[in-house]
Length: 442
Image (cartoon, rainbow, N blue to C red; front, side, top):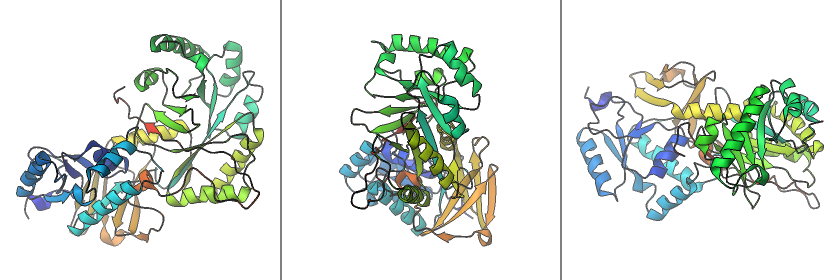
């Protein structure tokens, strides 16, 4: 057996490809690493090298790797023009927009998968959610009343499954309401009055408020910033204050979720004062996300208790989807950060596959997807190594899932199914979120 034949099928080795392509592969859970100078001697080198034939340096790197026995895959077979690269870079400007329908990203990964398979390789990816889930739903409640008279009742309606955003200016008497609900996940609502003229002054005030919350044994986990133009501190500073994420609302009422722990994205749907759609439309809408593997991030205000009650019922309906992960903003953020830190190597054996992972997935078991054409087998990876014989794989034909995962799920996140004449829909908005990995540059 040659040295090249002993190399792992994955990770894909990247020879000077554009950053947007590297980010897309990482967000989609496809094992990919930069090509080392001596591919066959470097630990973890895979046997496929992806390169850019329009880049002389990249082509030279791929040529040297091919001389060592690696199989070259030309990126320009999937992204032939520089405009395509620019479009990917633009979509990835704030982190990959998870859950949105990017035909370009989906096409790129599907063609890359076909090229690897045509060369005798295998396509394996880390699943987007812990095993056995195929989708996720998170709820947020914005408390507009500083009196918090309804906090206990609202928190009791959604125990442990919602993030409650409150004023950052609370004093000890109002914080007592929050400290009594120890299991409730709390965040801050940030208005213009909460931001000073300079970032330094804002950070100083927020440190004081965070200390006040800590004294009451309440740890705010994230922010809901009502206008993204507000001079809020950068992600790294927010992380130092203990925040995991922030939800930013633009002047156009579009929302996105930014996290100091990761890059990624999610569908952030915020309900206005318009009437709700019929219940069956809600269920159909959630079902579409569930079947396509998209996450749902929903928010309502305490000014509309009927909306909150509907979210409770909706959460109950989602429970019928046995593979829908009902979690919170913080927990989802933690999981996605750990997922991004995972490194995966896949070897082909005489009888099947051997997979080796590095990194810690916390208390959530990872899942891997082994693809064969349009069929996929999903397996739990409860430890950092997994040996699977071919005869033990059960492949299912996938009509809604795709090898890009929720980085390009192909479902319309921004609207509900078309209503009948005369039916009014609530106003929704789709985020363009960025979720930064822990320790990423500010």
